Amino acid sequence: MPIKGKFRRIATEEAFSIPEVAEALRGIARGPGNSIDLTLVRNIYDAQPGRDLNNFLTGLLDLEGRRLEIMDELGVDMHLLALTAPGVQMFDADTATDLVARANDRLAEAIARHPTRFSGLASFAPQSPRRAAKEMERGIKELKLNGFMVNSHTNSEYLDDPKYWPILEAAEALDRTLYIHPRGPSDGMATPFRDYMIHGAMWGYGLEVATHAVRLIVSGIFDRFPKLKICLGHMGEGLHFMLWRIYFMNTAAQRGGRVPKLQLKPSDYFKRNFVITTSGMESDLALDFSLKALGPDKVLWAIDYPYQPAPPAVAWMDAVQVSDEIKHKLYHANAERVFHIAPEK
Image 1 (cartoon, one colour):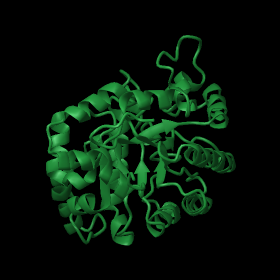
Image 2 (image 1 turned 180 degrees about the vertical axis):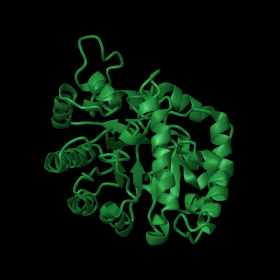
Image 3 (image 1 turned 180 degrees about the horizontal axis):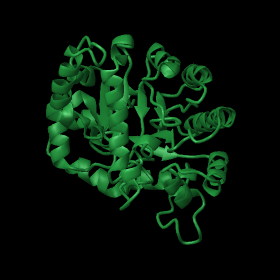
């Protein structure tokens, strides 16, 4: 049982995998390719003895052993689980569709065994948008999962492309939040990220997802799908810091007829259609800015297990100097609302 504390702790970006996906990614790691994601994939799924120093793969595959022990030790009540990046988005459409169904089934089974400890985000294969929409519907209506996870671009394409609109339509119709998780920069932007290890969580991941989100905003997607809900991790990938400049420049481009006309300001869409999590960004200054820029209903706590260590993530949020009312929202109330998680009885 979790250690009971003052607040229910729901961590909202917690990764897992299944052996079938891991084995398929091992095959990708051993094959040819120039995707910048291969750095991560090879280091985790085809690591030489002693190379996987952080034991990420062990942490991803172990759902009900050490993970639960760590949760108990730290008083973390629940993990919102999602299939880890790059998910199934490096496979062909048929392979991806098969694997994602297995992963969603396995996730639902784990939640059924531990309904007070796990909730989950359904994955899907964007390579086949209409089959993806069907799997999204199955994930919510049959498997009773809590939302969706996508690992940003697919084949260096983004969700503002009309071919992917069935996915956005399904997310809106099912009234579930779509978490856009990072992966390596798409092929067209990858070159300057290949040096100095800046392709990943240090820099490239955040810029890639922020770019995806900006494309959605300025393309007019949220005029077409006004009830679509998007979640961004890592303190919003820093996007809300740039909203004034995005508005200023986008307005000029709209006047010149070079980009779609928008019904609202970019900042209005961000405040209406987005929420963010703190995953891997334990910064008092960043949190303070986020609360002031977006409001306390838009920020959710997360660990980013197993990629980020859990103890400091808990210690940081426990120590954050905000009111109990706001901490209540950060730790669990916002997660319960955004991801349709039943409140604690």
